[in-house]
Image (cartoon, each protein chain N blue to C red):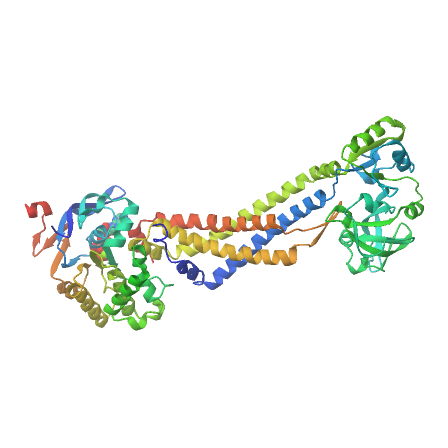
Length: 236
Length: 389
Ligand SMILES: Nc1ncnc2c1ncn2[C@@H]1O[C@H](COP(=O)(O)OP(=O)(O)OP(=O)(O)O)[C@@H](O)[C@H]1O
Ligand SMILES: [Mg+2]
């Protein structure tokens, strides 16, 4: 059974008279350990799909099953708890908490999980080491470069060992050199830490790093030129 | 479970230092609001204390039937004390001395050595039995007044609008065409006597060319004695007397000042209300600039309740700091500050009630000020909020 199953999901926005439907019955399966890139024109609905899988947005129709849980059925509070345990979110603009140090930012998701402070410290240290920022632990976001901030953002996303790591244009606001660093880091997260990764990107080179490349076109998901069918048909 | 999922305490604290000048200004505003509340409550409490402390249920005041509740207008025959002690049983008596205090009470213009304009003061002519009946009166300095002398209550200077030094022992005051030397200072447990000037009765009568009295205060063996004196007053219609216990008299006064006290509480409510608006405004500012950050916290998995709590924590911390500062200022500056009032002077009292009200208002400012902006920020869907700048 796939780790993530998106089944016939639609998302509509009522915009006055007309309805915008960025996702029109899309289906997608992601296996454990996959590295999937999601590309497509601006406004095609990439962020919308990613946010649905990350459990911060609600689908109009369809099911999203992550590690056996249909998250479209969860209440808002339960969904928050679920996110804490299962999702690591890497933002384009890193979204670090300015009043917390790099260390404290990384520690934040762990505060939501039942865990001793010793265990917490160990995990934060491992994550900080993975992004090679141990020396910056006591720095505040404003004392770091954009690339360093994004590395802290990645450490924060992986520290709780989530089921899925999602990244929405993680290199969107970085220069080429830093982009390269971050992409290498993401590949390592997938290969060495064996984490499942879904990355939205505009950058074809970045998308090419992923093992699976999916495109979103006019509300439909395409892989290798073919439209993805519902998971049920797929397995049948 | 609840404790596990809160945001770190430090997060709320550090957010206060994010815009130090804004926090400082808010702190000053909150301090002023709480201080105002403390002053008004201190006023109400002081007024209540000065009225409540004065009544003794064993003491009966006998004054003129025609004078209403105002003893200043009362005039009764000079022989009333003698008639009372001869006719009524149950008057307190010790070592052959009867606890009967004839008194002449009036408001008059009083000048001190350093005053250009005379101030309105309260003068009471008394005999040596006055302290027996008016038990709370205590000399704190100097001696009981002899001929040509007066003793002054510790708030008399406030009532006059004079400085404390003007009414020190050895200074002189002038009223009704005579100069008097201050022989002593007295306190009276916060009661209304403290704003009066006491002179020897006989000499005051001579100065004023009066033979009558304003009232007679009689200490009875028990509160039941009031009925006996009351009966005496009814029987001797010719004397036109009225008897009322001291505690009843001041209870009536309390009632008289009830509108003032009510007004005080209304002012407390208004001040607190305006403080809440100031607090709201600041918290709106603090939250609006942080919409994306709060959405990030939600995306990470913090529940909205935890985020609301940290915002309330921030505001409440600031309000509590304001309350502490206000209480310190209140205790050292406001408490004991004398207030002039028509019936005398009294002191602003910062007591546990005042501090409790002040802290309550501060907590209210924090919670009520933080919740609406916080709730507003939480209403925005996470996906939208996370895109905001
Ligand atoms: N809250 C909303 N209300 C109405 N329409 C919305 C809302 N959010 C998104 N949309 C619309 O949904 C469509 C998909 O948006 P989405 O953000 O998923 O695009 P995207 O593929 O991530 O684009 P980009 O590459 O520019 O980030 C867009 O046409 C957008 O206008
Ligand atoms: Mg997008």
